[in-house]
Image 1 (cartoon, rainbow, N blue to C red):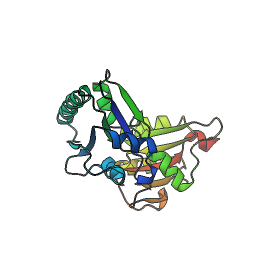
Image 2 (cartoon, rainbow, N blue to C red):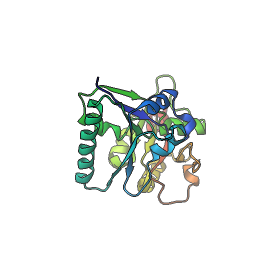
Image 3 (cartoon, rainbow, N blue to C red):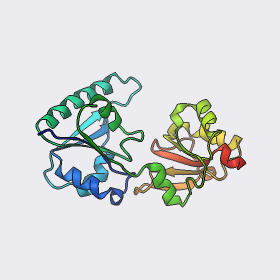
Length: 233
């Protein structure tokens, strides 16, 4: 009997926000896979750690997240081969993914390489939802449009997308903070925007964007803001 590929959403950071299903499937998997940037611990593994039984079979795959994707693509290719072999032995392979597996999740790259395997995906709470909940910041209501936009898309595309929606979470802020802050200031939106850093973790910081003095923000930061549609509505 074949096993399954399991995409396990571990949520934004607080272990208490991991779903019961994610815990159950991970505990019964034949292999648990964690992904991490080279030289750093896996954030998804850290979130799931309180729920893992002693002795669970595990591997951690380090990924070189530099601008050249050659090395990281090779790592995904090899991991896909290893997962295929494990599933063929009849074992479920649980791949831990911070947030939600299908929202900018690393799991997507494995899913693309293994489209023929039996798969089950457990959704996780995303960072925009977590930050909004911590700040009591409504994301959308009625017929208003909400978007999740990566700051890495570039300021011109970000400007175009924000002009079409009522509210947005701008994720992957990092070094793009000055450009994001300038754009929102240009539209008169900066005063109501919030910057959320590592929401639900011990390092959480949620502040008005205008009160944040830094020129950059940690990579795992996001801005909650109205879009131009929301400003006009």
